[in-house]
Length: 253
Image 1 (cartoon, rainbow, N blue to C red):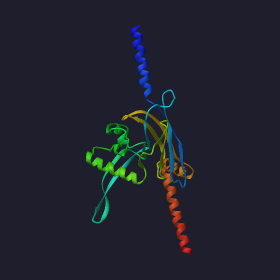
Image 2: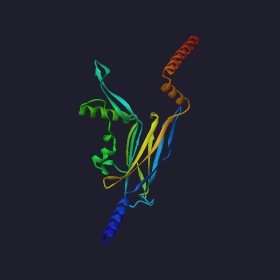
Image 3: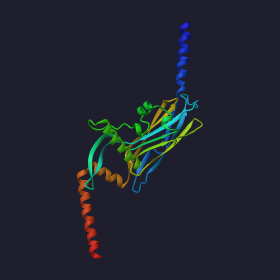
């Protein structure tokens, strides 16, 4: 009987401890973004609810961090140097897997939510973005090129940090807006949401967004990827034709 009571107490304790952690129910205003001629970008609303495993309101104060990350790609970063008054390419480094887009939104500054170790594990912030160089490179050089890549992508609007952009209502609903520039890559984007309390991540959830080209842009992109030879031949023919037409028009003036 005593053993049964102990087992019952342990089970109750386990359930109580498990119930402390909330679950996240995320949603996105658009799960598909179509890129057409004249596309100027898009605003995404990432929202959701913080609930208990039973579906009730989560009791407690939680902070929210949202990461939206675009398709990874290989990027070559080249350093420019001025030689004899002319800017030329100098050293370069290739990163094998750099996100084409990265945006962070949080309810408070990340430094006030988690320690550096946790931020690095979940890549919460551009400072902790894990960029893998190709080959062996000196750590100091790697940091210099990594900082250069991050700065370049930030100036293009492709890397963003929006601390304080997540709004939480009644410790139940949260929302954040993230802007995608017109130069975003096509592909699948991953939106990962974290609930943070007392310096640790207590819950996470993932949703996805697809960015794809439509109309004439899709036709051009498809043929450029699948029929490179014919696409190149067509491009040359169009260029020659346009040049010939322009020459005839100027001759008539």
